Length: 192
Image (cartoon, rainbow, N blue to C red):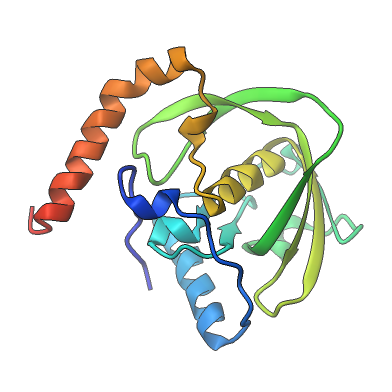
């Protein structure tokens, strides 16, 4: 089922997610709905907060990126990307690996039509569980690492705009204010 994507200004986007302790059919259904919602919105990542659920769950699918842009190992092996996508990342614990910080343009499904250059570390390792509760370890660099960091930030109530410096944020402020106002009006009167 395609779910409504929350937008900037909705309080749930600032909530830290609760840890997932029950790995059951309801969780699998939620993850399936998140993946379907991500695809419908033409995204490559979606966090539970973005569907109004403050839990430590996100989904990603990078299978449409060129293989040469994907640098990763899952549980110590390089598995074909099509075999591991879409990927549910539950209860993630992220570790920064040695490397540089790189700025690149990011967008977010909760911020329609707003994009900005966001600095992120280039390499990470993330320990997480899948929908069955099985533990995994993902090491990734580049775009894979960027997308995972973006989604894991959501699980902590951190938004991509929080990584902007004051000057960049000031430039985006008029658009953010309009988006927030539109969301507030829709929340007051959903018929509009």
